[in-house]
Image (cartoon, rainbow, N blue to C red; front, side):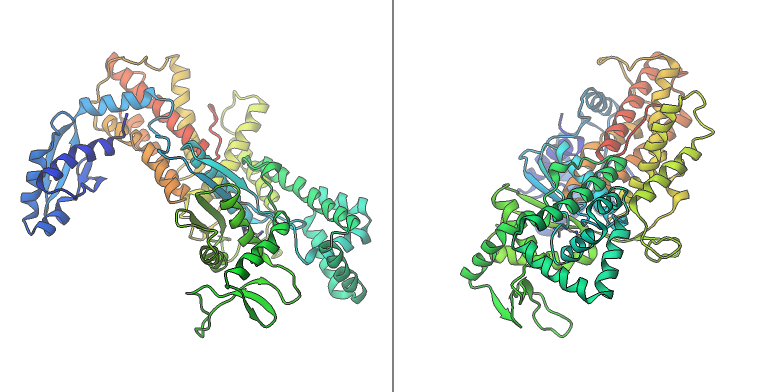
Length: 574
Ligand code: ARG
């Protein structure tokens, strides 16, 4: 079943082609009717004719009578289309009969590499990693649902000069004690102590420097110690991922160190292409279009004056690997906005080097900061950055309190599972529902509220529908059951349901889970209108009851599927 916008566009296209080939209907949902086509205006301009007259000609030549109740020319030449109740009913019955609920799979599936989460070894995960992890997870689910081949890459920071200091600190503590500290998740403490020794003690500094050389030289014992740090940290990150309920596994860890063997080839390629420039001993590329405040060209440093490779070299190697080895057609980087310039420069250099061909899209899926109530960076009372684990535990504790008075008939286990779904869902939804490029204020009361654009509101809307079926002991009407859309609320809900496919598609296209959130919130609100005005179980007759049950069931399934695509659980009872 094609979605309704595609179908209307095809019908109108016939009318447009009859007036003049090469024009486009430009359809969108409308407040005045169901849909509006704006294409007559640009066409009239091109032909030097009156837009209303052109619109009339288009409508005259298009066959719409079997699908539309009314077709009106309004304003300067808009075409307002209202679907016939019968046709709308057929569409929604067809959509409800599908497992995919009107979400089409991609016509040409792509390999999409999603770079996200990317915490740093021996460092605590903070709210920045929360954003990357949650947004990246939703994008992987959405793209996968559309049939794309999704490669998740957790670009863990597991290499670089700090590891000299971290390994020496591990030795000073004793390996067992170090492992213990890291395994209980005291990563901040570990890092802070290492840093303190480094700052206070010249001998420690010297040892750390020698250790970096050993690490880079591949000394087996040093590599073993490094591996201890990496393994313990990843083990800890896994616990956070499990609390969050995201798809990431150990198989998705492709840390910075993975690219080490590829770095000489990156430099060699750039050298051969004549792109490398020596600048104060460092080897750089100056991609056109990047300048500092004084207008001087900006370098992307590929190899430092001490011959070491930096963050940028690794990102270049990653692009080369993702396109070359994995065959990616699209690269997504779910990374905070402050790294915009770094990534733009890497993409530009990769284009110059031919690693990013014309057909490959590379996108920085940038996001803003999480702010406290004071609109400053989100911090603990003592001014430290908030540990992500603590935040997630608090979310569940608060959710437990919020449902204490509800669901008296739930077992302790079920109550625990619901609190988990609610708390984690609230945090995720608050993050996903804002335009990701903007900062947002972290506000427990707002995100856990059962009213408003929140995770709990959507979860509750879903559970409420499930409970209608449970309480009424009714089944979903079988396919072919006669249905009738009479009330405006029924019509509105049918139309809203038919928008699921394009909401998922636009979230994928724009790398914007907020588009899906906004859609689901609109759908739940439209359902609430119906629920408040049109009795379902006590509908006036069988046909209307069946229609409403069918709409309710489809709504619950769209909510559950949509929440699932956002990585949010949808319990049946709350
Ligand atoms: N590890 C970095 C951080 O914590 C993020 C890495 C982002 N991904 C990348 N390919 N550069 O800030």
